[in-house]
Image (tube, rainbow over all chains, first blue to last red; front, side):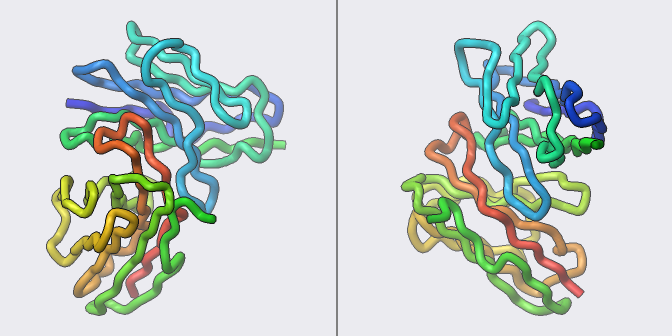
Length: 113
Length: 114
């Protein structure tokens, strides 16, 4: 069965520090993977996606993610955190039983001044 | 123009009432979805429509009834509201039924049942 696991429900970093949000997946077919961000009281916004091809994917707001098939991972990184990055981040996998996106449980990112 | 718009943004109602949430997308997508986000932020799919046809109907109480008058609109009607229905409901749309291109989400409807 397809599944997504996000390690760490809450990550706290200092402003300017590296951001690393972890996502592992399980899929019986080549995965299509996504990261979404949800700011308080807003909908989900697509940060980046991996379909095929280059395994290092760049997204908006300076975020990037690397697809590692051997580790079944798709971790999200940003070299230097900004206060405005504080939000909930969701990893998602395409290809649910009826073709829908399957979401991880989310990771709340806090950024300290 | 908002790509996926939901109304209302907030909805407070009493137990036992019937309410509707409306969703419209102007992206020309064929597929639309309703997701429920609980208090722990977990997102669970409820329904999916492709060009007005129901294609996903997860285990949801039959008090919830989606309606798609055309492929740009997907409404959610809820009968006999219960306290446990309190959540944020998101509408989303996609070019593909497989989700391979990702979704565009609305800003959500926060439903509070008192």
